[in-house]
Image 1 (cartoon, helix red, strand yellow):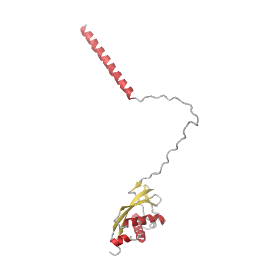
Image 2 (cartoon, one colour):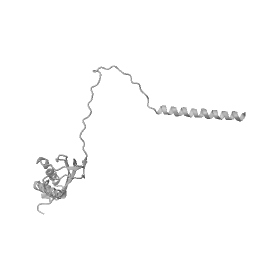
Image 3 (tube, helix red, strand yellow):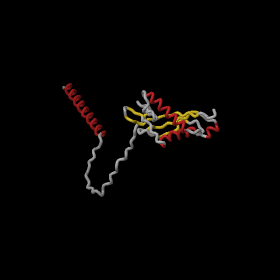
Image 4 (cartoon, helix red, strand yellow):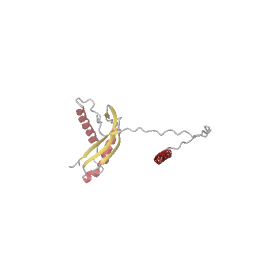
Length: 186
């Protein structure tokens, strides 16, 4: 009987131990669970309720592309015969013609003999206008400001670019334009 009593005692210990472990596991889960709060309805009149705050106006944020299937083009070559590369080359010539017809070499740069290439970055918007133009590289003497002035004058003169397209839809595209200044006397 001693063996039976010992066996019974061991079984009793195992059962009580496993029950104790289970109780600990349940207690830990209860600690991790979020407390349930009871909502008690209150009587409110319309005067007691705060005015509803309208949601903030969502600005239309469109993605600005750098490379698209159809890059934006300066206008004036839409009826040019040939493929898209011919139209692109024509648009580049027309853009350079516009820039160099409207650019004025700054006196400060002329006096100091400053020349070089400035880079102006801008966004060609979906509607063909220019926005957010800024000088990325300036060689000094007012050359960067002059290049920026000429780029911004496109909107003032009513020039609307052919917008860039991605999957057939007009999109905003960042465009970097190098403008080369050569000293008039050199």
